[in-house]
Image 1 (cartoon, one colour):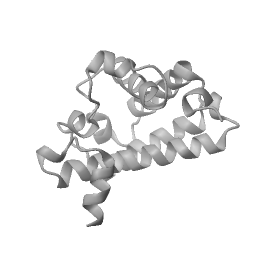
Image 2 (cartoon, one colour):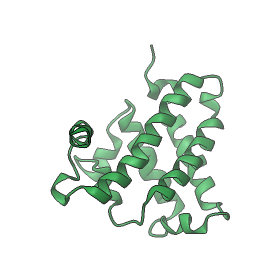
Image 3 (cartoon, helix red, strand yellow):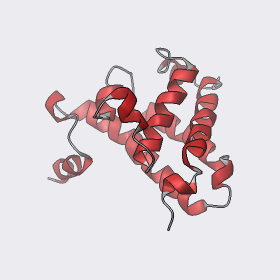
Image 4 (tube, helix red, strand yellow):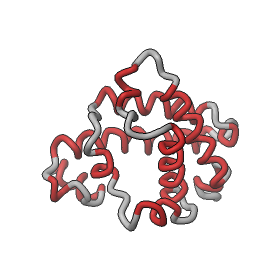
Length: 151
């Protein structure tokens, strides 16, 4: 079975997903508070960073690592932004729209659902980790987080 990276169309597919997502974000006039979260970067910078991360995360070359360094540390990279549950929900809303309109995934509901579930989990993981973890726990692997939350 092809990887998610292959199923979305490789680098081109993830570039398109990131472009579509950030077009939705930067054109969001219903929730201007949400757009303010992204005020420290341009649309092009945001697209590039997300695209590099997605390519690396889903089985492509380690482009993100080449640009940003060895560790992704999503929570740490997002710590300076005002991200709560409402922002996570809005992020997932725009990402779901981008997934649903991605040409490579038009006939692949299984991959759309897998990606949606991953993004839903990660968006709220960033919120939970940012709010409830000590600074020395922020970069712990997700499995350790799940263990901590279940005890």
